[in-house]
Image 1 (cartoon, rainbow, N blue to C red):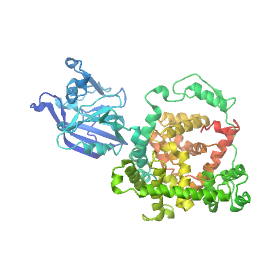
Image 2: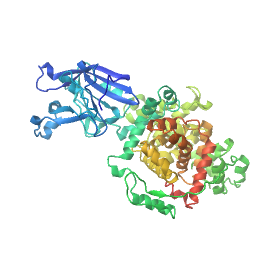
Image 3: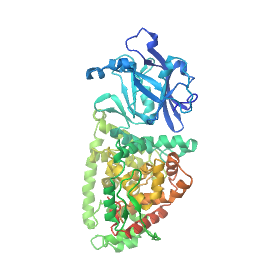
Image 4: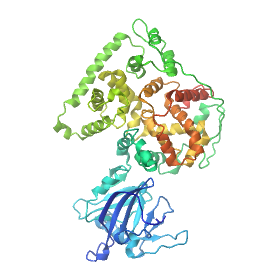
Length: 610
C-alpha cells in the first residue's frame, strides 16, 4: 500500500547519513551513494522502519511499502543483464551484498484507484518502509570492514538494500528495535540477527510482560490503549502465535481424525464430522445439557482439619479432605500446615515424627545449596555468565514484586531479601532451568504463607515441578495448554471460538499470562491464595485451571461479541480484567462447567488431558 503524506508518529530513532550504495564499483561517482534518513516510529499500534533519500524527506508520494502478503506494492525484479550465475563463495562475500543492490530494482504495481504518483528524481525509487512485525532477520557487516551496514530481510523473503551508516553506529538502531522484538544471533552465522528467536524470547518476553503495575500496561493503556496493548504483549504474543501457527498451514490445528477420536472416546454419542473443510472444526453438534448451580462452602476450619488427624499425625480421609478444600478453600490459619501436603512437600500418609525428620534433612540440604552461591566471589561470577545472568534477572524481578501486600513493602524489606535468596538457591537446585522472569510471582505467596525460608523454598520447588514446562525455552508447556484450552472452549462454545478466530484471536494467546503464572496477576493477593489451594487439590482434574480460563472467557463473551471487539480490543479488554475478577464466582462457574462435562463423560480428566 502506498503511503499518502508524510509518515507521522512518535520518533523512536532517527539517523541521518545512512546511505544506499547503488553501485559497488563506482566509489568516485557521487550518484552511486544515496544519502538518506532512517527513522523508527510508533504509529497506530505499529512500529515502522522508514528510510528515504534526503530529497524525499518531506515527500512520501514515492515511498514503497513492504507489506505482509502478496498484495504488497513492492515488486523486486532482477535486471536482465545482471542475471548471471555466481558461485557460493561469491554469495557469501561482502562484495556480493553490494552487487545485490545493483541486480535488484524496484517497481511499483499499478494503483487500484488509477493514480500513479510521480517521482521527483531517480533517488525516489529507493525509498521504503515496513512494519516491524514483517521483519524476519537483520544481517550485519563484519567488524573492521569499513562503514557499518545492515541488511533487512522480511518474512516473505524480500531483501531490502543494504543501509550504510556513514555518520553513526548501527548499534543504536539495533538497541531501539530490541525494545519491541527479541533478536539473537543465528547459529550458522553470527552476523545474522533473527527476530523472535526461541532461545531468548521466553525470558525477555516475561520481562516485557510482567512490569508493574499489572504488567506495566494499565497506566499506559489509559494514555494510548492500542499502542500500549500491542507493544506490551508483542514479544510474547508474536512468538506464541508464530510458534503455534508455524510455517505450514496444515499444522494449524489437530488432524480431524485425531480430534474426532479424542472427543468421541471422551464423550459417547458426540456428533462429529471428520470431513476436512478449511476453516471449520470437527465438532458439528453437541448438547451439553443444563448447567448445574454450584454453591461454595465455608473454608475448612482448624477443627475440621484436626478431626482428620490420627494419634501419630497421619492425615485421614485424604480424598474427603481434598473435596472440602476444593469446594471451600482453607481458613488462613491452616494454610501454613496444609499447603505442604497439597504441594507434595509432606506426604499425606506421613507421621508427625517423619515430617520433623524430613524438615531437618531438607533444612541441611537447603543451606548447603545456599552456601554454594553465597561463596562465589565477584571474580568467579564474572567468569560464570549464567549465574551472573540469573542474579541480574532475579534482582530486577524481585524489585518489581507485587507490593500490595505489606509483607513485601519497602525496598529493604526482609521479605524481598528472602525472595532473592530463595530464587538464587533454586538456581543451584535446578541450574539447567535457572531463573526465568515470572518465577518470583509463584514464590511470593508461598513465602508469605510459610513465613519460613526453608519451607517456602521446598514448597516452591514442588510447585515448580508442576510448572516447569511453562518456563522452558521451547515453551512446549505453554503451547500445549493453549491448544488444550482452545479444544475445551470449542467444545463449550463453538460460536464464540469462531468469532475469536475471525478476529485473529483463535489461538487464545491473550490467555498467556493467566496460564504462565496461574492467574497471579489477575486476582488480589488474598484471592490468589484461595484460588491456588483449590487448584492444588487437582480436582476434578489436573487441568482445572483451563476450566477457570473458560469460566472467565464465558463471562466476557457477551461484551466481546456484542461490541464487535477486534484483535486489539480483545487484548485490551482481557488485560483490563486484572484485579476485577470475583474469585468465588469464577470458581463456581468452573466447577459447574466440570459437572456439566462429567454428565457427558464420567471421566472429565479425558476432556482436559494432562
